[in-house]
Length: 240
Image (cartoon, rainbow, N blue to C red; front, side, top):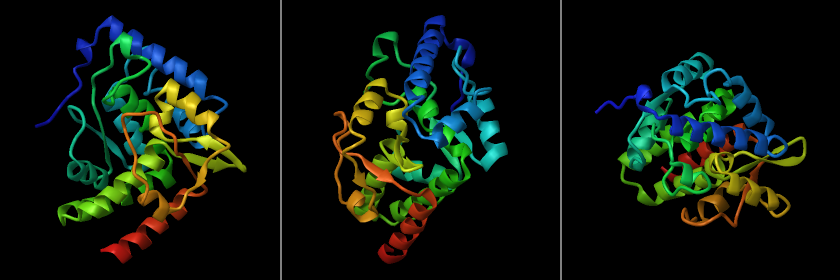
């Protein structure tokens, strides 16, 4: 089933909520987020809009023009095999529903703000876009083959880098993961942990369980995204 964004159905309250979330996080992240993220967020200022909820079609077109990626609208969380398949096709998924005004500080299931503000901008970066494509290809192969343990390891990699990772820039720890980018509380908490980070090691990350229902107490810092893609390829060659 193909899902679409019914833009005209958004209420003024939903647009207001989006604007509040966008402005709060853009301000909150200025001195904390990586230049990679802030640069791509700025690059998407014409499509990932502030006053109103953005149009998925416009964001997708900008992504396609820059790195060949697109955006697939989904109703909510989707099974890992389907998620990996979309990534392998250079499609990132987003929902189109926006949280209520009383949920601006916490929401259990990711909404459109998390999916787009958190995840989409870095896909304008060629190194990150390349990593995510390869991650999807590896995950698609392993999930189709029923390699559940290896899929769990990939989910941990995704969690501790794509969702809650730090990156090192100019010798400093900077916030990167989408779960941090899209949450005011996570931003402040993670930033307070910046002097107590673990060096990113693929094997250790893949062996570290996580919980999605609590604020994080373990963060890893990555030095180099292309190197991570190489490490992922080496792991795949050994494990498959």
